[in-house]
Image (cartoon, rainbow, N blue to C red; front, top):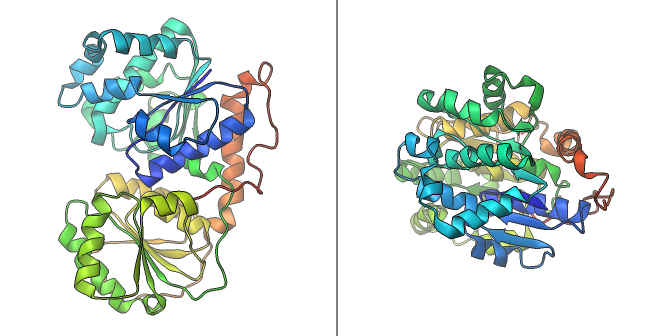
Length: 388
């Protein structure tokens, strides 16, 4: 049995896309293997992934996280959530101990911004010592880490079989903890997916993915000016709703104030079913990490901005350093004197190499299963149809 840990179930598109990437990959590679997925809201996840076989959903580890909110770090270190969890939580832990491997899939959920999620690695470290299953993580973003937690969290990760991270700062942190021999710096887990097809036959539009962050007025003001200055906006504007609640705070205000009648709002269900409909001719502005990533995979260029420092700075800069072709800006001082049609390489050019790197990580962490599992060696070839 494979036990996946995913920050899924809130219908945040990036987190769901990472979960979908791994569920697609593992159900294809190990078609007879039972897979349990520990998600934040298993009922929501079960509906989102209703078409998959051999998949079951639970929330044991995310219960540990929820029960640690507003508690101090000592509560996590003492495994207070285990003592308070009752019979249902204890039964969930027994299920985890029966797994052949526990795989923490990628995302930016394991850092000091969400310190209560450290409960997950705390209990997994304990269960690993008791049961001996393989324990690894891929595509993780560990930054920022508060200095008060730094040494403690490093001790938890020392029991992992392997830790793969998606940004340089996280990798440097692993080296600092003395984990060089069980660590890798690759890329986000979404690069495991085949490159999505883009539409090259239409004029470029302005594509926007934005959330309010701590200053929604700044974001709205910036977007209104962007619509005015970006020449691609003359051909149409699309808002991508990667989070139905927070993104609409921005979308509704911009649509109302701009009075543009050609703004298309694509909601989560549309994106989940039909994928991003992006052309390499489009100009993209994104405050969201995975909109930046997927747009670049499809050959588009654009701008990104951080709505939370240092959390989003680390995320966007990791993509830029990989060659996304985007520029990072400050919304407060951008002059709009910009080369809107500049040509540069994107992830459409680099994604095959990144995917090969990620596949090498998969071979390393799942290599122990090759002798006793039925494997499909054509897993997610380039003909696979993955909606992104």
